[in-house]
Image (cartoon, rainbow, N blue to C red):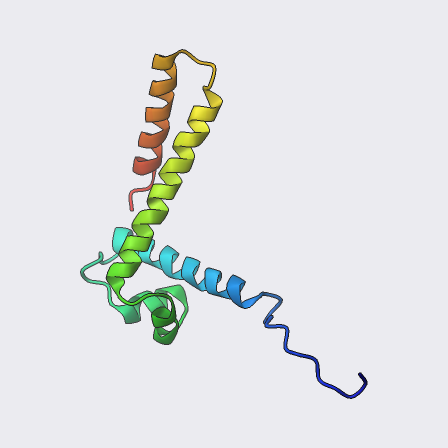
Length: 119
């Protein structure tokens, strides 16, 4: 109908609300990895410092997480997901290899993943 406003699309800067939320979460987790693992450490990081490092507000922090402990738990799950992906890729690459060779490749992939980043 001419002259009627259309319903808002929920998109901002070309991204949906879900995409923006996922981006904010990723930014908080990236900043947490830097601060917890390579910066002042978990115990010495504040919500304000984490928010600043992520380039986001503390209000946005509390929209994503309840506490810094929740961020630490989410980061732990993310690191586990990365290790799992490395293990599954090694298992797929060695599917036809003898068991000992396959097990060694899977272990090497896991060890390389969990020790490759000093944070």
